Image (tube, rainbow, N blue to C red; front, side):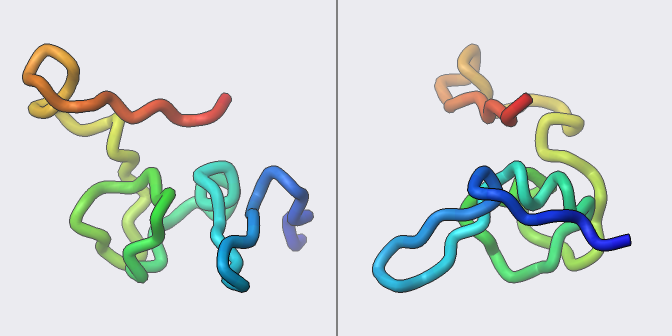
Length: 72
């Protein structure tokens, strides 16, 4: 059964379609194309289902980096 794509799943910028983290989470895996809002582990690995927030936080606010916030 195909998942319905809604206006929360993408936006357009400069004539290109940009998929949001909401879309990527619905899809459930990384496509490996270095998507801007990919919530899966970095560097991108096609087929991975591990979320970036599931990895140990070595660059969070305490380490001087930014925390990733996924939409609820």
